[in-house]
Structures are given as structure tokens and as C-alpha cells.
Image 1 (cartoon, rainbow, N blue to C red):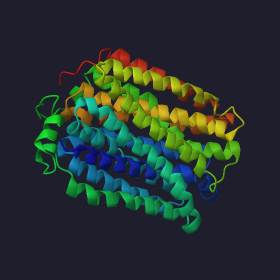
Image 2: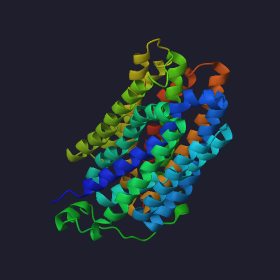
Image 3: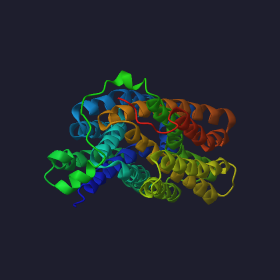
Length: 412
């Protein structure tokens, strides 16, 4: 049996990497841009809230769009849109200008995860999906650690505008590979009959389109949505506020910010793959999907708890390692949460369900980003936000378990 499906997974990994490079650039440049643009903590929080609001709006539209047109053209359209929006940051000169650019970026980037999860459901049997999801989801960490590796150099050598322009071009290059390579497994010349039989080993599904609104009547939809609403904002808090936190708490500059941020996202990368691998390992050993996914998510939630100590310690690298552990656990949790959509729904509905959940996560992000700036200005501390970050995963897992106690497949 050939293994072309893993080539497709590699393309998903690359797209997710680009997605997170583009959204991470602002967080890396924040200490420098604050001097140039002179925004307040509240304005910076609102700029990121604009991204989250557009991300929510995009999920409302894009998941359904991808289910209708398919991932080949839907994914390509998303990449083109968000790449142009990422480059547009270079033209911003005020907080309002950055807010508009972030809004457009969020609108386009909302297409990544609905398309990637739907592609995984189309190309992998259930027992491999969590591992494949963990691999492509690891691209979020690779993107997040490439940003502090590349962006400071580009900003110092060519100006901060160059960092946005160069990273924006990467998505257009990805589209040039995606469109010639991607086809559905049944129509792909590189997929052998043996590999196709493996991909479809869970049984055939009808391809009748699923209306968006009826999905809201299923508890399974709300299980995924609540998990995303509670945990996605924490990841964005790390992405957008870590550089600012290290600069203010420990005096880290744009020239030295790379090492702490790279450490966080390298370890998060390991957590993403490990979390997906562990539940897949348990499934292959005869565990039910319900037990395998939820045990893995519980272990990840336990690993997040110590992050509440990060703003209290006086040692930079203690804080870095605590945030790194939490970020790794988040990604392991997220890989399994995404995989629940293909456990609970037929392939034809996955894009729409991921869109609904992504919208819920973005709404949570709006609240957390807007609150972060205001709490920081009011208290002068990050402690409240890190305490919230340490606790919400237990609430997310509890919501999933209460709404889908046995992971029963939805009758769509």
C-alpha cells in the first residue's frame, strides 16, 4: 500500500504553518511597534479583538463554503485572501489601520482549520485521524516559532513593513503547489486501490449536503463548540501577549525575544503530535474513541495548571518553561478536540461543524483579547489572565463530556 495520504497531510501542515506565521508577526513586533504607533494596552487588545471578531465571522461563512465547493478550491481561496491581508499590515500607520488589517486577516484565516479537518476526514480512516490532525496542527507551533526566528531579523535589516510583506507572500507560493496536487482520493492518480480501501475502511457515506442550521440541534455540535469557546482564547493569549509579557516582565527586547518564543512553540509542536499520537495509540490497543480521546484531554488539562505561576516567578526561563508546557498541552488537547468532529459527524458535515466551533472559539477570543488589555491596564499584572488560562481546560473537557458522554455519532 502506498502512503500518498501523508503527502496531503504534509500540505496541510505547511498551510497551517503559514497561517500561524502570518498571525504571529504582530505579537513578535509589538514591543517595537508600540514605540512607533504608540498604542495603549487597551488599543492593542482591541486590535487583536478585531482579528477574533473577523475570525468568528469567517467561521460562520467559510465552513459552509468549504462544504459546498470542496477543499481544493475553498482552501486555495482562503490562502490567497489571508496572504494579501497579511501583506496589507505593511501599509498601516495607526491603531485603526492595524485593526482593519487584522480584521481582514482573521476573515481569511478562518478557512484554514475547517478545510484542514475536512481534508483529514476525507483522506484518513478514523484510527489515523487524531495522529494526522496532530501533525498538521503542529504547523501552528512551527509557524509560531518561525515568526520570532525570522521576523526580528527582517525588521532590523529591512524595517518592520518587510516582515509583513515577506510572510504574506508565502501563502501564494503554497497555492501554487496545492492546486496541481490536490484531488479527492477516489479521483487521484497517485492513490492505489489498496490505499483507497484503507482510507475508506470505516465504510462509505452518502454525500448529501447538510444544512447548517440543523447541525445546531445536535448536542455533539455544542460539545465541540463549547470546547473551542473555552480553550481557543488561551492559545491566542499566548500568541499575541507572550512577547509583550516577556518584554515588560523580564526586559526582553526584539533582538532577544526569539529564544523564549521559539522554545514555547517547539515544545508546543511536540505536544501537538504527542497528543494526537497518544489517543491513536490507545485506539489501536482496543480502547474506545470515547475513552481514548477524553483520557488524553484530561492529561493535557492537568499539564496546563502550573502556568498560573508564570507571572509570579522572577526567573525568565521558569516562566518560559511553564508557558511551554501549557502550550504543548493545549495543542495535544486541541488535536483531540478537532478529531471529535470526524468521530461525531459524517465527512460531509465536518467542515460546517468545525466552522461552528471555530466561530465559538473566536467569540471567546474576542472576550479574552478585549479583557486582557483592560485587566492589564487596571491591575498592571498578567496574573488574572494566567489563572484563567490554567483552569479553562477542565471546564472545556467537562462541557464535552456532559454534552457527548459516550461520543455517540450524530444522526445527520
